Image (cartoon, rainbow, N blue to C red; front, side):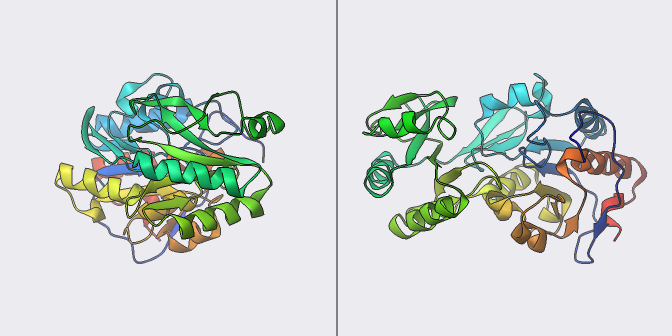
Length: 306
């Protein structure tokens, strides 16, 4: 089915019995290929209306994204209320109602060792840091490699970015590894990094993009979700989480109202409590509208009635 920008899908939505039936007070969603299909330039108007419906009845909504906060504006068409609450950089930057409530940083010395390992053990990969020399997060990022020729050889994998020869001395908030050579090689790089650097966790943020995200050991999107639930004084059974890929597992596994979109990876589908339609059909927006409607009636969202 072709990708589309508007209109509800109202596809059949099913769940399994282990979900909670308490009122949902917080909805958190991955962005790329979950709330926003990769073929869409931004979140659809229909999805923005669904978010408005949640906010208008006093519920909280937020993105849980591997991206930095200042990448959210274009994704939500400049609607700041849509991302005033959320967990960004895979849960490393957590905001509630526009206020930063938690941060987790990546050690600069360990990142330097990652950059050296990537240089010495691959010919088609590079560390990427998303910040200036002082670690302030930015969307654009910098390649970090002493071999800039590998960037020039593969423009399909490596888009236009400045190149740094080494990691700055300041700790960083966001980092990942871009890797050419196909999916099998990407998985090999991820697994090798996991073995070499136990201080960090390494996950694939997309079922498509050639990227390995880097996170502090033991901290993931689920950690950010828990911070938000605690800050709001609500239980995890009052939170719903939506995801599609490996870096979403932290907020899917063990959460009573976790939701996999139809295009999710097999491991996410197996871990999720509830299952809905595809990202390209605005299935998450459908679910958000159902949450808003249930809050008004005291009922249960349709996708949780399996």
